Amino acid sequence: MLIKQKDPILPSEITGESIYKQRRVFMQSALGLAGTLAASNVAALSSLPQEDDSPKYPGPKWLQQQQQQSISPDQFQAKDKLTPYKDVISYNNFYEFGLDKSDPFKRAQNFITDPWQVEISGEVNKPGVYNLEDFVKPHTLQERIYRMRCVEAWSMVIPWVGIPLADVLKRFEPTSKAKYIEFTTLHDPQQMPQQGSLFGTLDWPYVEGLRIDEAMNPLAFLATGVYGQSMPPQNGAPLRLVVPWKYGFKNIKSIVKIRFTEHMPKNTWHKTAPREYGFYANVNPAVDHPRWSQATERRLPSSLFSPNRIETLPFNGYAEEVAHLYKNMDLRKWI
Image (cartoon, rainbow, N blue to C red; front, side, top):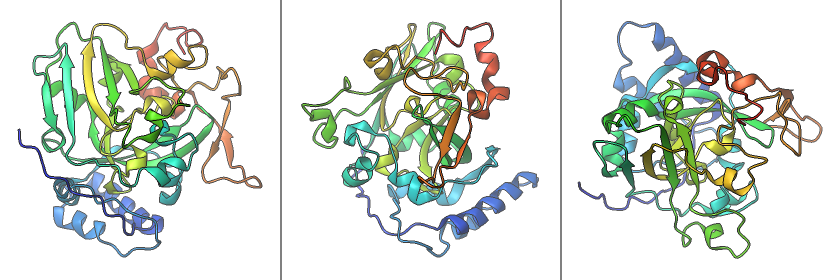
């Protein structure tokens, strides 16, 4: 497989939220049409005038072209008000770049995401190392608007661009022994300064996992972008997991390895603090974190005088789609 030359990320301007919403309405209306959305219409919408000075991240040329030609509306469209783009890209947990919410935005701007490869291994018939372009291109990119609930009790509503996780995993032909999927983040202390810090608190590289039936659920998503643009480095470029019924730490970023395994992976936060962070990490307002309540959340943007606090929903509001996965499980024990 060919390895692409580096295509540097060049921040410039981003389409404003109000203009993007016009695009969103247009794409949603397309769901009612018998035909598919014309590629020329998507390209035109992607080049609407800029509204603010937030940086955008065009990503590699092949991904730009695919975004312009094949972003398709999807049935998963949360009706909540979108979190402004500037908040989505500037308020992040990505501990590889620092512990403060603003550190990833400040420290990840030169993070190299092209070329990028993903290693597939374990209980599959088609293991190998795949260039990201080969990984993504066979699929039609979709836009999905999901609620995202952090275990720290804040939340966002984000329009992701990407591909269903199940569609990707099936291509590698899992064997009957594949019971879990293990994901691993890039380990590169030169680019990710916190990985080399003497004061680091996590065991790198970052590892997460799903049961295979969770991974095959229609909601599970591999994201390559947000707000119709390529994924910013601080948000997990170039490839991250999105499982909206689980707490945010399950949504592993900058994925370089996907391993199919017979045994439950030891995910990073569960290894670090097993009493506080479980393997499943399903959003559950009835089970508090040992140090704070999970009954409510702070929906961003918010402030001291306008906290924007709302009730948290079981499975983050996606119970209809996923509750059957945990039938007869004690969700207080299997946190």
